[in-house]
Length: 123
Image (cartoon, rainbow, N blue to C red):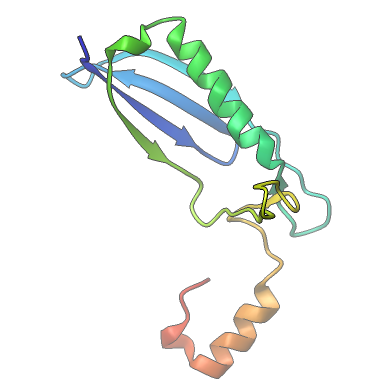
C-alpha cells in the first residue's frame, strides 16, 4: 500500500529525507551532512557531487526503516538561490555557489544604481 509521503530537504549543511504517514506523523527519517567550503573570505561553495551523495545516503538510511513500496509521493525543498554550472555532458564546471556567497556585492551595487533601489531584488 502506498501510504507515505517523503519530504526531502537539502539545506546548507545537510540533506534530510523524512517519511510521513497520512496523519502527518514521522515514520522514518535519514540524514547526511554536506561539507561547506569557504576558500576565500565571502566565498561559500560545495562540491556538487556531495549534494547527490547526501541525498543517496539520506534515502538509504530512510529505506532501512521503511519500504520504498509504501511511497505515494515526494516533496522536495532546496537551498534558496544556490546554483551550479555544468558542461554539455552534465559535469560540474566548478563547485556550486551557495546562497550565502558574497562575491556579487559589487555587481548588486552597480545594478542598484542603474535600476534604482525599488527594482533591486537581491540584498
